[in-house]
Length: 256
Image (cartoon, rainbow, N blue to C red; front, side, top):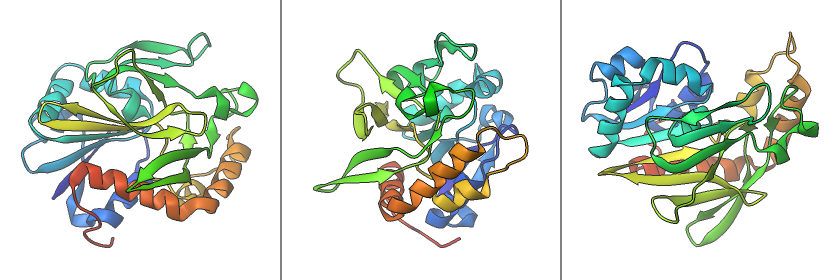
């Protein structure tokens, strides 16, 4: 089994790499950049392609055109795209980030697996409504685990909720505590895309590892969010495992 994480050289994806290695083993998790993707890296041996968090304008700069065409063909032919935070925004028909503010980013996106908009940040989770200070939070999300309704606190860092005028073309897998769509599954050809607004791959330890005080206005909010994650670590891990099960049809393969 081969899992590919998109590498753009702008963002640190260490936590995502560790989380995937815990599930599938280090021999099965690899990186691929835009040149690799355009050059045919998404071959038949790739079970899942993971687009991580960061900022989707970097993705668009490198992948628009040949790269996105290759990703769409991979999914259409039976592949699985897992998008997290920025990777989820990037796979919507359009993005609406901080509309009406100095940080406004909006417009269409080429992948368009989700038939609608990725909208964020979720202002209910923003401290004092000020995204210039921090959009780190640890909201609860609700999801089904077999016949059971489950809740888990997850790391939120400005990710989208999903808005569509259509009633089909996607399935809601989880909702934020305020009722907005947090995780969706979108069939596309013979494959599918699963898009996650929150960073469901990150544990309390992952968030703490990535924190700095130096020149970081968000430190206090990151710390508070990390502390809240302790309360439902088991449920959050179950959610992460469940999403991977939907992606690849198998649970833990090897310990990293």
